[in-house]
Amino acid sequence: MPTTNSSTAVNRLIAALPGPERQRFMAGCEPITLTFGEMLAEPGTPLAHVYFPTESFLSLTTMMNKGSRLGVMLVGDEGMMGFSLLLGVDLPLLHASVLGPGQALRMETAPFCRELKRSAAWQHLLKRYLYVMLGQLAQAAACNRFHLLEARLARWLLLAQDRAHSDCFHVTHELLAQILGVRRVGITKAASMLQRRKLIRYHRGDIRILDRGGLEASACSCLRLDQSLYAQFLESTR
Amino acid sequence: MPTTNSSTAVNRLIAALPGPERQRFMAGCEPITLTFGEMLAEPGTPLAHVYFPTESFLSLTTMMNKGSRLGVMLVGDEGMMGFSLLLGVDLPLLHASVLGPGQALRMETAPFCRELKRSAAWQHLLKRYLYVMLGQLAQAAACNRFHLLEARLARWLLLAQDRAHSDCFHVTHELLAQILGVRRVGITKAASMLQRRKLIRYHRGDIRILDRGGLEASACSCLRLDQSLYAQFLESTR
DNA sequence: GGGCGTCTGGGCGCTAGCGCACATATGGCG
DNA sequence: CGCCATATGTGCGCTAGCGCCCAGACGCCC
Image (cartoon, rainbow over all chains, first blue to last red; front, side, top):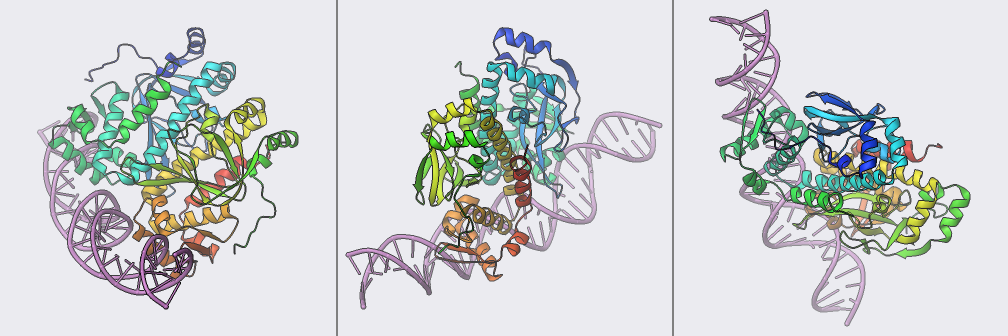
């Protein structure tokens, strides 16, 4: 029983559009309910839709030939899936799968590209979004290289909490291991530690954040950097 | 005494422009000689120029608050520095410093943005470039996470060789350590190994590639992926 | 030709995380 | 009620890379 914090389910990118364009855009969107584990994109397969999560959130991951994965970013109501289209390519670079089930808006790629071409506001907004993604991606690369697992886990849990709009969501140790690029046992160890310190509680894949402040203290500084980058370029009024 | 492979020094992005636009663009560029170690960009400082290396090449790095660095990509005659401008932001996300000294073309940001706005060909080309950068960035994140130092070093040396247009260039173990995000001693160990196998030879910062094929065999598969991504989106005729 | 700064090599103890194998708990389902 | 797939906990030996320190080696400059 997730305690939802959000009042109405909107996507913040869409909400940042000026009124008339927002109306028109929304009219072209289709509401859809995403279920846990659903794959929305795979490299090599052309994209059929772009997705704007409202309640749901997605995990974007790379996959090495050897089969090991690495989570690259989370996409919730603050973002969108399908940014390769902003660059005129309909082939996604990353795997996208649903982590938090729930509502999203989606649009077919062709009308989306038309809208994009037509709307200067969309272009401006999504270019900034891409800029922020780039910064976060570079930051994540360094984070994976330098920071200890426990700090990275804490950071990831907070990112997920924000996107789930809830202090509890579903993700097993196994899945977390794939996302953070470590063994499952590594997650078990780090997560037990966080649980022992009463920062989180989990039970068969259901994770609940108990002490956000404490988690923030355990998380690496990358969290702050990500947040401030987003705030600077996507929440300013200009 | 570098044995140069390139006939004439051009930048491949610029070369990909259609004739008339290329002429006009080149006219707005200023040739400049870059010297080793020069800083061309730092996050927080607005960009004054965009750079198109011809003979020279640059290293783009992130810096963590703690001071540890991580090289994110190399930019030579196949690319440009300043892609944040493609997204309408004049604040660079990465540190850019000159690794291979030599000629480059540069243009002030304002005229560059004007050219960009004016030329559909430039837009198309640079969007694809950015797409490839994104893919390589995600790949690099995974590479840093999973691959052993020796393989990563071999890969980096090959990337540098391509951009230096020469089988020998200058970079000390210390600098390599910063770029690959490890201790200097780690580089010494990995490099000695490569030298012992007669793949490279180095002496006080001067590195010479002796056996490119052997290095390729030691390098991780990311090298291939990077190359094929670039080839697919920036060397095709469409 | 003496001195110093830069570059490379090596040793030593330590830790995070790996790979593998196994043990337990738990919820759902027949 | 019993079974089983799923989820979590543990143990053990191992390795890559860390942090620290020092030693040699080379080149350049005075």
